[in-house]
Image (cartoon, rainbow, N blue to C red; front, top):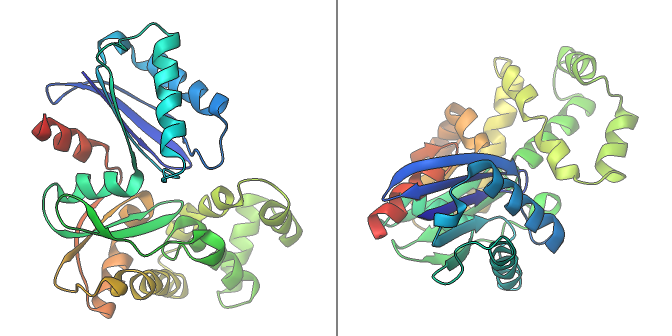
Length: 286
């Protein structure tokens, strides 16, 4: 059986498959080895395995995650191996594959075809994929220096536009009433409290609920135009489809496609989560 994991910084989707059929699945908080300790990561692994059951039958683990880099692959591999060993699971034949979430997105969206794969969730990322491997990647640089198109930057853009008076006052009034926050509260959450990126991304549903306002919709379209200009355009492949995973791409599909048209790109597949695409990919590969 396969254990397939797709983890962002905010949440992780887990499933166990057998011959391409879904046996069980669950969700947990996200795993990111850049920010989390071994203890936190192993705790989430054990939580997921306990929720799903069937763990003793797992012989392959495919983990795709945010923060998986050259210097964090071994950390995650060892954490996964340790959890299986300490729980007396199937370690004799266990195979573990740890890849970045961008590879997961590319495999889920494009399988063995060439294209541009993108993630637009709490963070953002993109790559040029040749059907087997990632051949180019414009660094996203995080929500302070980059991450154009992400939920975190969308939240940041919303706050800036409201308080800099570029959006109607009714939008700001509605925001403060809904979240019961003043500007001072926002400053605390962004500059003094942990996980500011998650807080900023959590404001995306408010943007969606006000998308009928012309100024808000234009803000969102410009947000995505910036993503295409600063990331996708650098690949120099306007002939290829640009495909997306992530809640921001999924819920703002109309504005994303409008921005793509403005910048001369064609949008391909858009899915909220890559998990089922990865199930199909590994089923075909087994």
